[in-house]
Length: 214
Image (cartoon, helix red, strand yellow):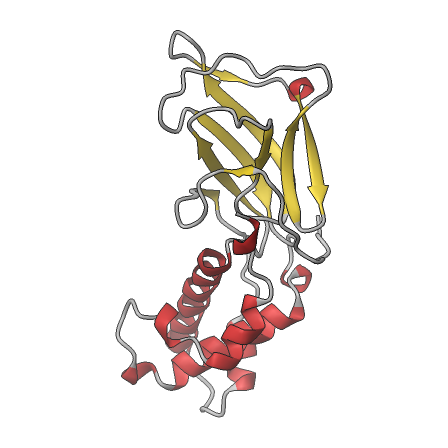
C-alpha cells in the first residue's frame, strides 16, 4: 500500500510516545535504497562483496536514523505506540506516520487484564500526512487502569512496501549521506552516523519531518 506525501499541518491531538521510543514490531522487508545506488553516486572503485555487505548495513542504520530524526516511517513496518490513558479529546495521533492501517488497540481493564478494543469503538482517519484514531460517534472508551503504557496502539506505517514508494528526495538524501559516510569511513567513529549527515542531505530530509505535529 503506497501513501502519497502531502502538506503537514498541526492539530491539537494526543500522540503516543514518539520515536525513538516507538518500538518496531516488524521491520521493513526492504530498504529505501540499495548498495548499487550508493556505488553509482560515489567515485570509488567497485566494492567487494564484503564491502557491499558493509554498505548495506550503513543503509539500514541511516534509514533508522532518518526515521528517528523525522518521526516518520519510510517503508511499510509494524510499530507500537503506548499511552497511559485515553486522551481527553478522544483523538490519538500516530507518532510515526504515514499511517497505513491499525492492527489493534489494547488496554488494561480494572482487573489488569489486557483487552482488545473493538474496531467499532473508533474511526481511523488519515488527514493529509497524519494518521488519527478518533472515538466513533455515540461510543465511549472503556475503563482503563491508567498504568504507565497501559494502552498499546499497534499499526502499520510507511510510504509503501517498495523502495519506489519513498519520495525521491528522501532517497537521494540517503544516497548522498551513505555515500559520504562510505567514502570517508576511516574518518568516522562508530555510532556517530547522525552527527555526520551532510548539510545538503539534512535540508532535503527536514522538509519531511513530522515533529511539528506534536
